[in-house]
Length: 255
Image (cartoon, rainbow, N blue to C red; front, top):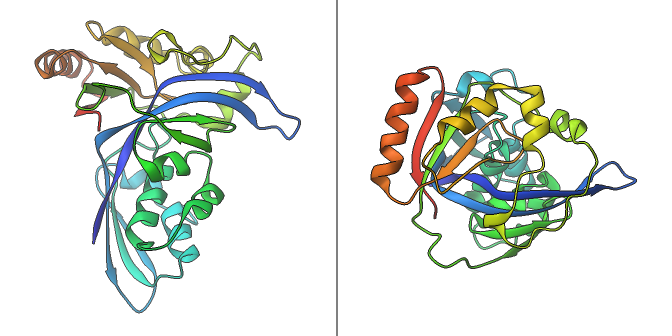
């Protein structure tokens, strides 16, 4: 059994306020790439998780991975292997996408919506893994159709610096800059505070010249560029890799 944990991007992310309970209220448009981490499972006598792949080291010593929490919630004894291809704490789904992949893989025939919401704010959107509008904490999700968005060439670029979501939200200036109406004319309100914490994000955004739209995803530090053609995307990828060999660069498309 195999499931892809599709990389998530926030085409736009507007922070509208902060509730008395401490959670920020957002309006966002989620989209998903064709590529991501890969989760496989085989029936076993006991639940286990092996993490492989280029970013496995970042999860070593983690006490309770969200994939394991999802499997336990479903009462499944399986041997899981997570091929960690996406950087950790990068604003592109990460653990939320992995947990959602586990729910899809192991929860066949069951309504796992409530379980997804209990695992994290982004997990319901990652469970769908299709274009959707998110409100509340991002956990109130409604699928939307955007004509001609599927298949759009995307370039993902991360400077190799993990960025914790809580720190970025804490650095938000508290100004409500208005609702999310048109995502193309929208913004990511977490981009400025993230740049204050990791100035190199500004360099990443600057490197995405030629993109139709270039923004930071989620709380960062990954940025994305949407391109008119795969040739333009691939040329940008080659240029960025040559100039910044330590950055993570991934060429993909929107689902």
